[in-house]
Length: 378
Image (cartoon, rainbow, N blue to C red; front, top):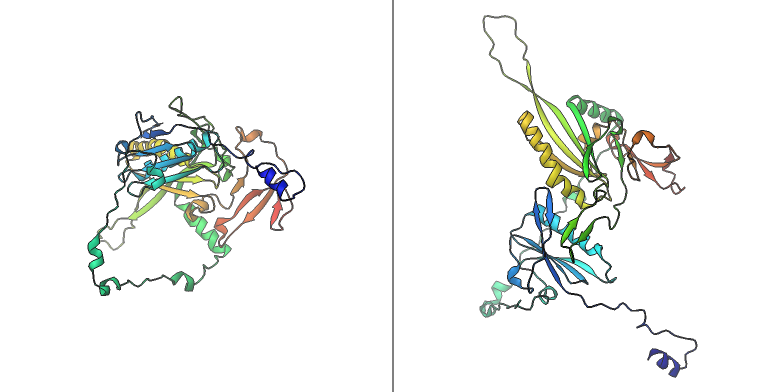
């Protein structure tokens, strides 16, 4: 049709019909999955029967797969950690099979469902509430508009002051004096393993491989997690700190010599969860629903203490954690080798980051090309 129209207009050359290369949406059945999460396991059973809005419970989350659109329905009484797990599974389900280029995923919260989402349920009837009495109010009441206030304090505040090298070294020294021990763990092969002492401060940060998490739910209704799914830029550090409290002692009036106060030593435990810029959210979920409970139970059993959990990302680490590496942080853009001692050295280009404090000093690997004078070859 287009070619004939082009010929009637006097056009020269051959023009192809645009309908030949267009994507055709194949007929697909809709699937509704309910996410069941427990300690150490995640399951996605298929909700059997006809799609009905009555099957959506406020305490759970459901994934609706209509091939071109994948929706995550979030119940208003569901927990935040449970929502994050369901959203990560929705993303993996979307990438599990080939879909049209215009497909997308969307979050739908209970009570704010879109009309497109409601069309998937034939029994979903929308009733719009209209309050006719609101139009009877006086114009004076409708004219009352609250004044909008804007916080401009950040615009006029002073910029952060750069800390000198001497102050940074004093901070590192004082912080490490309160540190009793530090033990690192790395997520390798789907499990958290102890990090060798020589690798403290050495991070391997690389892109999360797409398609490494296979969700076979359409036909098999099972969730399969390969051992390399979570091995992307995830580290855990267990730090033990000293806390010194001086107890007040009663001094005897008869004794002329004052007795020195003996400090009582207490311990405090902090667990730092570090993830790279390209790390998947599944690494945090693997730690939250598995390894975190193991560490907490072990510390409570041995020392009767509850550790503090600190989640941090690359370039956003707290200064207290960075001080433990003594300005020797190296971030490599590749996969962590199985045997660190057998890694063969090769020319590598690093970019030096310092920031406003020498505590944040680090070397980040960049592609081996001459793009910036800020880089140096190590």
